[in-house]
Length: 274
Image (cartoon, rainbow, N blue to C red; front, top):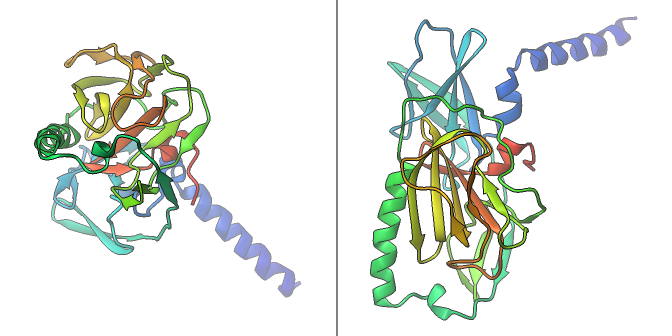
């Protein structure tokens, strides 16, 4: 009997530990570079204010506890990381994740090695987009488990190390969906349009602020159907799929950002792969 009891007790303890994890934690806690860490802040009468790497983070309430939803950039080193909440410092562990490589051939060589005039334009556009990514509105997101902006198969995953014409550039910061040109792109949660533009690399682009630094970016669109400042309900069309900017063909590119860290959108649609 004792030999049977020990494994049974261990199984019960494991089940109890799993049952204690919140729904949000089970769905979103993927603490790897390019992932999300869900940190339990405990109970409090009012929403705590938390920061990671000096930037405010999304804080939501589930039942009687507050949770910090922390975006981890691809540059985050595995090991111990720290979140600050008031006078407290909360340590958490970041695991490791290896991302694959992708090699792309572009006919337009300026999209690989821009000329001086292009670089001036790119720098100005980058500043605009960084400002948008760093937006932090007080309202809470309507939903954390997101809808797919389009229905279709993935053609390129998040975090892929990309080589254009043999030269390494920034890793892929979003998900690509293989869908035809003209396909409507829908916002995966309520939000406000905070930036619209036509950019050298991204082509026709829309940023939607879902609240508290939780932001979606859509690019390479053939058409933009919204304006800055417009309030959108979940499922509203923001534009149409295209191949503008640095693209080899029509597809839908979607970025998700948390506290100015680009994270894997697959986490929010139940498609994350360790």
